[in-house]
Image 1: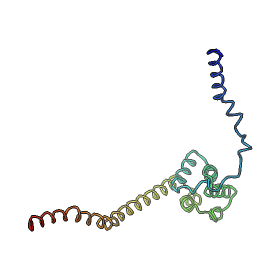
Image 2 (image 1 turned 180 degrees about the horizontal axis):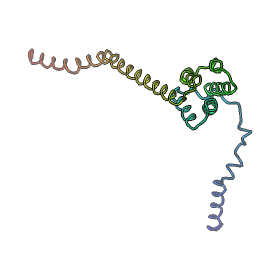
Image 3 (image 1 turned 60 degrees about the horizontal axis):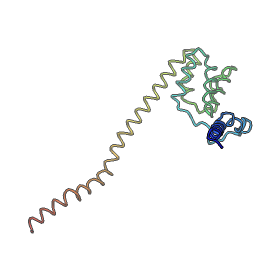
Image 4 (image 1 turned 30 degrees about the vertical axis):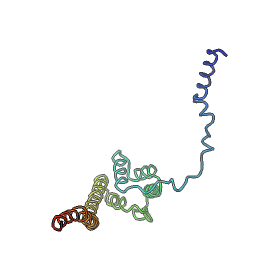
Length: 183
């Protein structure tokens, strides 16, 4: 076998191994890979502040409140998305505000939007105000917890550093002085 033939065979086998059609032909089809959704992979609950911000953006684009609730519910998914979509559909069909949100766990969203729906005021400022209030409350809780943590760490640090200071700082000095005195 000549070196030219050997080089051609190596080039052809490298090209065939890295060709995209090999990967596509061997890949399972979409029907083969579709299976029931694993509940462990389902989206978890979304932060209320993020939901309020998403609704504010959806309403800011000009969508009505029921349409914005349905759109954000479809985008969010999970239990919260179902609650939003169900509430939006109920409002669109003419349900009262309390009946549209019966059994829903979205208390922050419902309380922020209730006045807008019942009185006809713009929902954007109410959504932004409630989101800002939740952010302030979260910051306050974080600062309070950080302050309490500093107080709670004093005892363990004292129990660890005081014996170390005594053993590494005072005991050698006292042994040195005792050696000089009794020497």
